[in-house]
Image 1: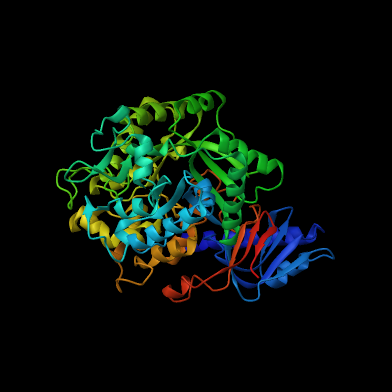
Image 2: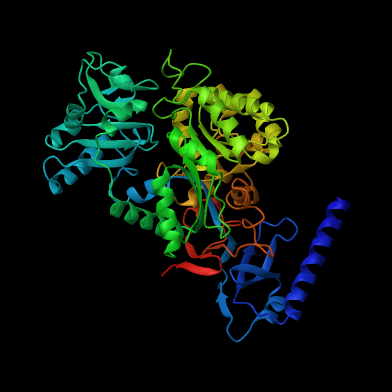
Length: 574
């Protein structure tokens, strides 16, 4: 305790010296943020009264009286009017283009019944020309308040959908991105019928065409089987792609997101981001993971190495591997069979040999590996492959590599400590617990849920870093529901009152850190951003309520008032 007090006292002394030096240097701030509650996520100085910014960086923090000495004739004074400021929120796992396209297609995220989904498609058909594709995303059968009368293997069938769209192929992706739903017209174009077998064109390994008891396809395709129809959907134009990207950036800024980890994209996306940067339109700091679905792309990047942006706006330093499916469509790869589907273990959607190969090449070329794993089998297999790759390169500090597992939702108890031992970042999305937990127990059973599902505290106690996000457009991009879920372990309706497995809830300080400094750590940027400290980027999120003290349910009613990136106010609420 005495040691901690001495460290805090030393830090406060250093901070005072830095403020005095800034004042005595004669330099004046470009802007000063004051008159609010400011949480820094700096353990040595957790709250301050004011922050001074110079050239996009934090010049000084401290009391209002101290910081006001840095005010000059041209200093912009930003009165927070009693609101709450935190470091800029970092979305640690989402899909930027998916967020944008969700605004250009049918958004099915809030559909509550199958009939409502059919109605939305019927409305789209009325506006379309015969033959036009109707596309959308966001449906989730386990979240519907009313299930269809006829379901096969837990999914709806295409009959009603096909009735309202006889002349338009329809392709609707599941909220998880790990299944899709087609109408009869789309299946006709793809040659899918009751004679189709799971080895059709060799594309269904690692996926399934869901069929009824007579062998007729129901319209649902899981995991890699989705490519049978999905490959026929017309390619997007670059003009439409840029429109989607701009809409996604705007949405980030509206929601207080200053940095974004894009979970797997190709060269077209990277080039598009670079154009936006060159044109001054990239207002969100981007950390892009290369998609592991393109071996040729990876080989090209192994040769040239990571692209680390000195401007901290667009860095390419990691590789995303998709190793199993999602729990909703029963695609998550499990050690034991699904409780609600005996004999079924989910899907290995990528050969584990590929994880080994990519991990070894990444270590040799300076890339981080980020592997999607939801089921306990997938998580164990990936940990084994990571460990084998680390052992092959004993001279490389495995802790410095910060390999990640994306989602890490359902773990075997014996694998939890391995995250901390190997410094594997658990890139988790707390909102998934809130959305999935009510029905996930049907998939896994009580024992597996209690021991290893969404175990944030167990992972942090192992020494692992847990960063937060939403996996948008799987879930809405808004970070506040995920922040709420982190501390409450409840659904957004506040159920159950005591929270699901409440011992695994984060404290508010941990939740804030998971969305700021831990997100920065997960992209090797903790010395540049993630906390409000002198010398770091002036990236801030300002809320109209104090998310650190208000009642839990009030968090869901909180709004972002202002978003600041590099000292520039890039969003201000009306």
